[in-house]
Image 1 (spheres, rainbow, N blue to C red):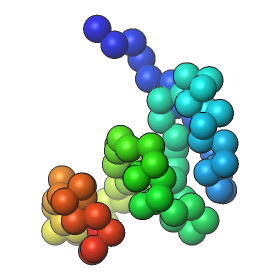
Image 2 (image 1 turned 90 degrees about the horizontal axis):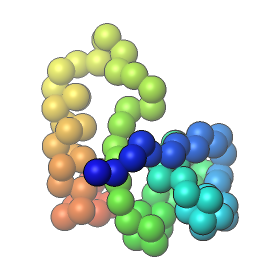
Image 3 (image 1 turned 120 degrees about the vertical axis):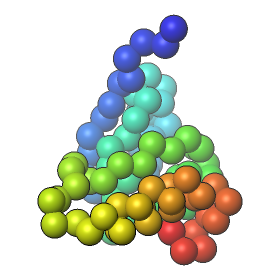
Length: 84
């Protein structure tokens, strides 16, 4: 049975530190900031994906948007960056 995940929170571009974080036993990097990090490159290089809204879903988010988000997460490996 796996133990708890080790999570690292980092603001900004942490791309160059990802190998060190993995070596230290970190399982999750939160967030992958699209403003300064290339998600496709990181996903291709390290694999694995835990998709989550930034911190919470605001109450005014339309239900249709939530369903679209879930569908995009489910189909990401097939679609890659073509629309997600």
